[in-house]
Length: 207
Image (cartoon, rainbow, N blue to C red; front, side):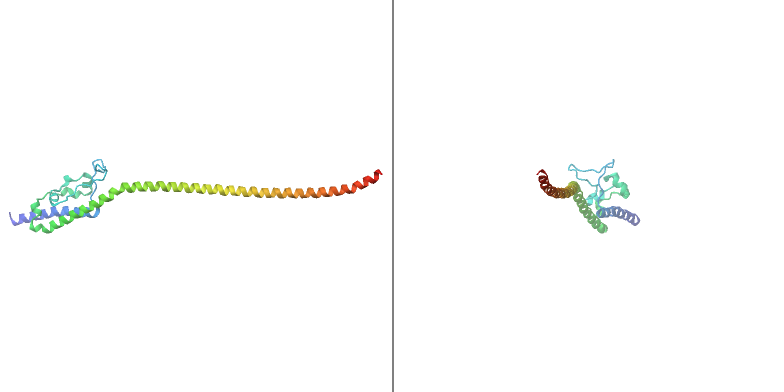
């Protein structure tokens, strides 16, 4: 193999490695995309836990990784996957690829940690949603109870106002009655006094 040809193969191998490493860096930073079927539905396992699209978890898988391993939704978002090509593990293991190999291993470890964090977060979502629903329920109960309390207080205030009005009316009527009794008592006393004056005169007239 000529020097020119070997350099070309070396450049091609480096590009194959670099392209895949670049995408792994993206996924390590932003997360591995979910596994989505052709109908656009996110897939879950038998425990209803969300699944994530394929990513290589070792050197062998990294070398074999091509677009056939990923779903169409992931490829649509990361079209560079269409350019992925296989390379031999022996090529990746060459001395002149030692830096690339270290980078591959670092990115794979990073993506594995990232997807574990994603899974932990996604698995908590149903529980958090349930807790939010329960919290919303009790908030509504508290609002209704508060509204009922406000209503009862208004009724109590209205009843107190009506009672006060009736008390004032009763006091007013009692005052009127007392005044009337006083006037009648005075009038009766005056009438009695007049009668007392008239009776002696009547007695003298009969004599």
